Length: 616
Image (cartoon, rainbow, N blue to C red; front, side):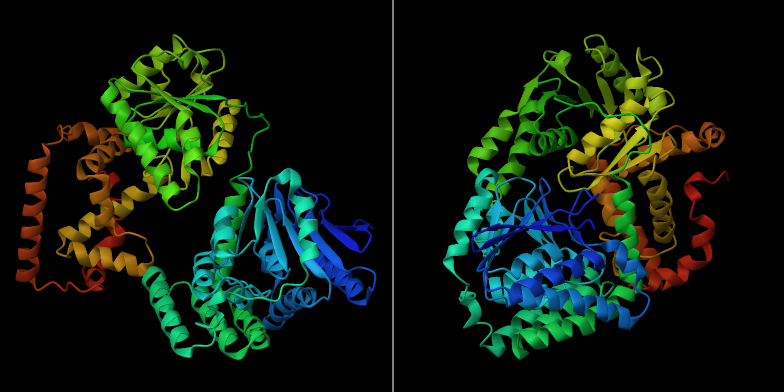
């Protein structure tokens, strides 16, 4: 029988290797948990083993957590409780073993993996960039219920535990050590040796220094929990119950003890597992996992050198993330040195913020910055494997820079356009190698927005699509591959949404009431605030392009879009619009509460939802 664990003995030391057969990652299914429970049984009976190290047999991964697919198989509250209690009590029994227990964390240590590590006396972590530790369960609509919610506050203190659990955070080694979640961060080559040394320190007896001030002070606890609840409600508007339940469990555990906390974990998490929120978030999780798989047989090419055309906000952001997340050398080009200086400054600002928060050292920042070089001509671009174009949204300009690049490009080099609306097929119409032209649409700000659209033109090859999608994943992005249709994916959805908000405003609803209603609904930002961020001129241009692509006959009958007016005129126009809208609201007696938009917009809303494309 193939097993997930193997045990190596070195005298009184047992090294438990977790290496799940046939899987890229280690994860706790019910079968794996039962096997681990039998190992705990053996350790409870053993008189020879006095030290234990938990290690992973997989490169760059410790334990990814529970097998999420099993969440969809739980059909009753009783089964949910049984599933949770068995894993929780297995880890709790492990934590109570008389042997000294050390976790040697070589990679991702998330969810159940983190809870197993918390059950150890000591935790040693690799300094690899892939080594992270945290509890992301709230992102799946539940909370850590294998002991994490109850025990983490006792290990690192209540404020730090709330931050990790409620936000579903994963910390890299330095930050984890700073908050006390791990005890040492070392090079991967010596990780196991250092873990063995920690077994000689004995069972850990001390707890967090904040115990006296927080655990023993009901008033302080009450203030902290109250603020945490207010912060959660301000962010989620009550749509996500898991963070609030996690607070309830922590409060019960801090006041009633570990056993009471563990009991509440089981009681509170079982209904969440069966709830609509968790089931939908799990479905979204699998969709995101599916997006990491390529649907074609082509193999991605390696990207060593990257060129970025344009040093504006988008170009600077792309240069930053390529240099930050990969080992690729980045060459950034613009028409003048001032623009290039601005692009470098934008990238350096993000790295400087990471240094200030101690996520990276100043030396690491300098090494990353050194990967980015600049030029006002095409020198160095003959070595680029991938060029990402981020120039202005103008078809002729994009065709021009493409032609110039192809004149000096090496064999096989890929040209990726960061266009948000222009057809990739049109950009590649005059190209020498249209099979190497693809869309790679980032969203602003590049360092924070997780999505990248990879757009296949009419002649784009499978190899090109797979190569660019694979590279985007290395940047930590969620990739959506789509064909060259109007608006691609995001703007195709966003267009009608923004269009309807315009109708609601026209009908007399206030900007504030429309935004407030959508934020209450669960959107992170209201449509009017989003329009302000994007820019009305940009939105108008995008709308015109989409109109031309979807209804060419309508576009020909309407006057062409004029060039955007100067900033001062746009500002005056916005103020005048708001003034007239306010006057109209007062004269009509329009309700301007958070729900006021619904009454006036409901009748026409559905009919006009796609008004941007209506042939009327």
